[in-house]
Image 1: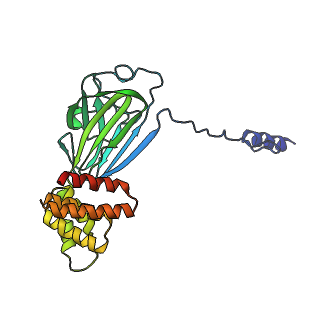
Image 2: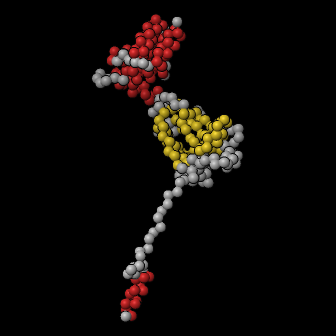
Image 3: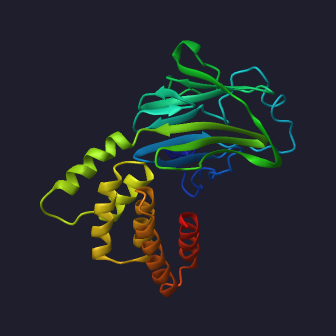
Length: 285
C-alpha cells in the first residue's frame, strides 16, 4: 500500500499520472509586423541591385522632424538597418561605389539630406552606427510631394540601360539619388565577339538597337539592321533602320524606310508606330 502511494505521487509530480491529462503547450500566434520587411530586387543594365528594409507607416504621426529627428543618423526604415547590394561597381550621385553589400543610413534635414553608404553589416537600427565605417557621404535636396505616402518606400525608377533613380518616399518627402552603372565597356566586346563569330544565329536587331541608342558606330548598326530586316521585315525593325539612316544623314533613304515601316505598322494594327514614323518623316522634310 505504501509502495503504491509513493508510485502514484511520483507519477503525478512528473505529469505522468494515470488518468491525468498531459500538459499541453499553448498555441503560437503570428502577429503582423508593425513595419514589415521588404526585399527589392532590380536589374539596371547588367547590374543586380538588392535592397532589404523595413517599412514603417505614418499612422497619423509627424515624421521628419518628429518621429525621425532632424540632424540624427537614421536607419532609413525601421528595425534592422537598411541593406543594399550591388553586383557590379556603380555610381551614386556621381560618387563611385565598388560592388558589394553595404548599409544605407541617412541624416534627414529640412533642406538637405546626407546619404551614407556604410561598410557595417547586420546592425540593428543606428544604435551601433560607426562613422569610421563610412565608405561614402554626400548631400541631396529633398522634395515635397503634394500627396503623402503612408508607408515608407524605397523604389528604383527612371530605369535606362546605364542609369536609374533610387527614390526614398515617406509622408510628403521624396529624396531622389541618381544611380549609374557602366554598361558599354562590358557589353561592346561581347557584341563584337558574337557578331564576328563565323557561325550561329546573330542578335542583329538587338545589336543594332544598342549601337543606335548609345551613339556607337552607325555604319555597323546599319549593316546589322539590314541583316535583321532580311530575316524579318517587321515594322519596328524597319523603323530602327529609318532612324539609323537619318543619323547617317541619308534623308531620302530614311524617309523611304519610314514610309515602309508605316505600311507594315498599319498592317500590324500598331498605330503607335504609325505616329512614330509620321513624326520621323516630318522631321526629315
